[in-house]
Image 1 (cartoon, helix red, strand yellow):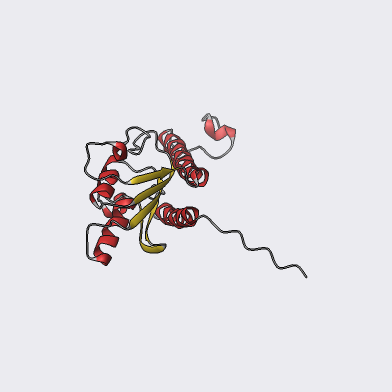
Image 2 (cartoon, helix red, strand yellow; image 1 turned 135 degrees about the vertical axis):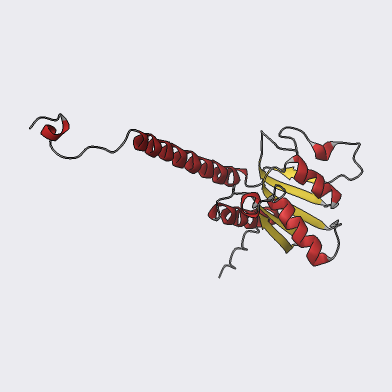
Length: 188
């Protein structure tokens, strides 16, 4: 009798990124741009976060910042040198600097951000030799599902805006007349 084949081992980065994708879905459910983050330490989830600047009226309410704040509170220290942060979208400059200030060991992101990315998309703050802390960065982990989630979200938003504009245009033209043709032209 043959022994069963060993189960394929899953990449820990992909497992953590799938958790971050779950967080991104939470952001979408509350109307936020679907970005999610998970902070891990030695293979254990320490904190999670998803985008919430709109719902909290907080411009710093990015997924990464939410996760960093939660982890720092739970661990009782703003320095998180043994931690790794997984985020579905390349971090912006604000988030990148917060990660370096927290002294994260590593940052792993999914989709690149060609408009505001600070890990190589627009600039690469992590590669700046003048900064006093250097965090390892890995990009492109589950990039396709991370990017697809964002594309679907924005496609839905654009479709809703088009529908709202059509409705507004129809309302501006006034009520649609009802009845037969004789009522419309004023003849008896």
